Amino acid sequence: MLKPIDDFFQKHNIKVYGHCSLSNSDKEKILLSRDIVNLLNSAIVFGIPLSGSVIMNLEDGPDLLYLHHYRQANYLLDRISFGLATIVEDCGYMAVPIPASQIVDWKNQRAYVSHKHFALLSGLGWFGRNNLIVNSVYRSRLRFATVLTSIRFETEPKILGFHCGSCRKCIEMCPAGAITETPEGFNHIACFEKIKELTRQKNISQYICGMCIKACEKWE
Ligand code: SF4
Ligand code: SF4
Image 1 (cartoon, rainbow, N blue to C red):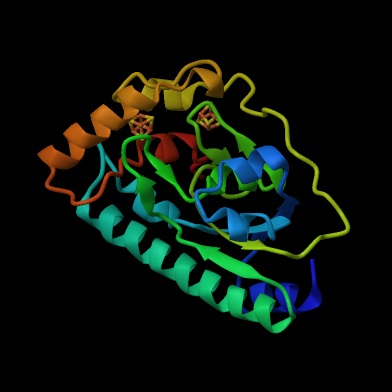
Image 2 (cartoon, protein in one colour):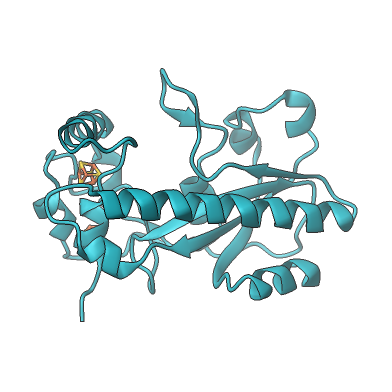
């Protein structure tokens, strides 16, 4: 990582961050103008942990405390992305800050990029059975943001393999039955339908759930 970027993350107490190169296949999936995408070479990804205590408070789906906390996490991620993009541009490179949580293609439920995909490629965790990035320290409660840039980094991170092992806690916890033995088998439609039902019942104005984050935590 370039020193100004390292310094920026340290100043903002960001402990989980990394970078990865953009392959042609990655670039095809970015929902931005081709004029910009053709000039981009890498993604800088960083994560902030949701409060373990707020997650522990969840009982049978999302609650108002989690809703507020989730929104604040996204605001914080977006503010940090904004500042990081300024630093990168000041260093003479292009930088596109991607919102932490913004669907731009509702039909296919897609954002400009998949932060989780880039977090995986950046070695920040593995794809768990719950379809979330599992980090060795913060488990599944990291939320991510990405800044796409023209920087070409000299080193590539090591991608982590599947480390869920014999754990099945999220399979047992999921009210939708959406989680299976493998991340590839994750049932996105069942998950989304259950989230819609839970948020409607509880009058939560955002599509969130949190139960498979809670399941993944190692409580002391
Ligand atoms: S978000 Fe909720 S419904 Fe979706 S997989 Fe996780 S626990 Fe299941
Ligand atoms: S709860 Fe267990 S199986 Fe589910 S993602 Fe976390 S480590 Fe993997």
